[in-house]
Length: 431
Ligand code: DLL
Image (cartoon, rainbow, N blue to C red; front, side):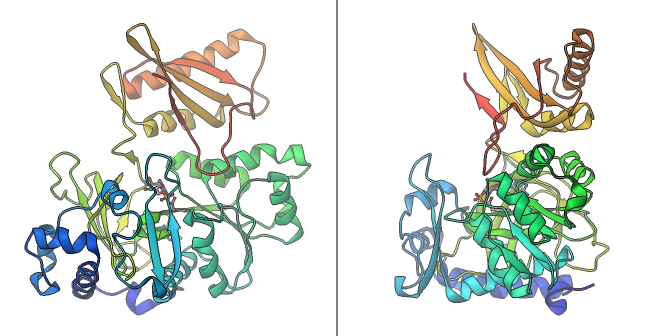
């Protein structure tokens, strides 16, 4: 196994837990220096890290939510002098005050090391040409992997997102071997390849690191088959620095959540109690490698489960399954609970379906209406209504079998449905 820090990455569970307790205590000491946690922790009787005797004591700490971060805007979660801060990231703030994360130089170095580790886990190395198609800016996707890729010795092309024609030119002229993009953008780019006069053999691409948005296993497979490359799932969130919280290794058997840097819990959505490995629940994370903005027991709202057992690669950090949805993306359609991921899985299992789709929710009288707009594969769209109707009924039947609702289906030609430069917007709720 080629890795960044073999000793840490293969540490046995006992050693890992001892390290986590040590780091958790340090995180609590830091947290007590922030206005927000000093009040929150004292309210439950925690006045020093010595109040945590074991990892089990962590459950005494109340969860932190996105609303807590918003309420603490702009400096309620800062644990050091602003003079020591060298970087900030913030959410877009479209639904209220943004959330801000500060990092000092050591925090940035720690994050960079985590990204080097993630890149090495998927086989990246010096000599690779890394085209970073994630947005650079306050969003952590672009800049997040940038420093690690440089530290590893890859040639970094900071292309940022969008401008497909330029992406293709850069890929061809500089022999890009690794790209970092959202899965929806990888599919969009492929759809435009022939328009720009290219074919997959024009490129030296070997790997895509895909993340920042939910996607079914079928989407990964589609990207791999269309492009003839390996695609690896990458998970992260700005509150926990950004990309490189959890990353697949070359086994492609779930994402290693780097447990020497993050303390993970998976809790039942209703009771908030921990669930067994293998059972789905909400992921709760504590960052152990950042001083300037400590965040303890953060409710990510992301749904996943811990994969029981050890990975064949030898790394000891436990793996999580791909994110199936968020606690807040469940749609209630005429009383039936449906997750967008269930719909995506059905669409992507049909080879006749193309690379882009949308889920529309409307009101018709008092009832909810579910409309699925999906592009069909290249060359399949036709005026032959019999053929098209047969496709529509097959998709409707498969969806009914999965979600118990028979939606209205609209088939479209490839390239017709809207595409976002950043994260894909799949659900449009007009109710
Ligand atoms: O999306 C950080 C990131 C950038 C991760 C690039 C990976 C690659 P935020 O904008 O704060 O940060 O959004 C975080 O996006 O809570 C999940 O709901 C979702 N998400 C991120 N990665 C995945 C993934 C970045 N691989 C939110 N699968 C998270 C499913 C993902 N959902």
